[in-house]
Length: 207
Image (tube, rainbow, N blue to C red):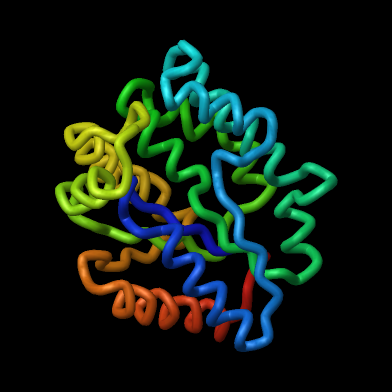
């Protein structure tokens, strides 16, 4: 499994589409997916993020972990099963997102512990972090839509980016993370990501 991470507006979704096409052309079976999911728990999370359902951050963090477990093991389209069948899973966000976003409000060690079951079920072969200046990301978000979720504020985005790097350092002995400069053109970012994925493939996918 290859996970794409980044703050909001970093271009993760666009790059997953572009990398999916590259891999499919090369003959790989690719399964792109995302979190929060569009399942029942993920749908509730989206309502909370939009402000339609009131909650607190501990509840959201716990629901993200539960949604992630369902994403991994549900019988219809669980990604653990997809990986076991030999498909290349490209996931838009995974547990590093929880560490980065929820650690603004909750101790990061608590969030990591809450997701320990998910890490045991499936660790990514690589987590690709697309690093883009938060000011650039915020301008992208403002130009594309008029409604924002609770995390799409420039001060929060800057804290989230810092928390990502804190989490990467905390888990450096357990996780393989690649930082990609996302301030370049979409084509250059895509080429850089593709180069890193080829390195992973050359050594063999672990999962």
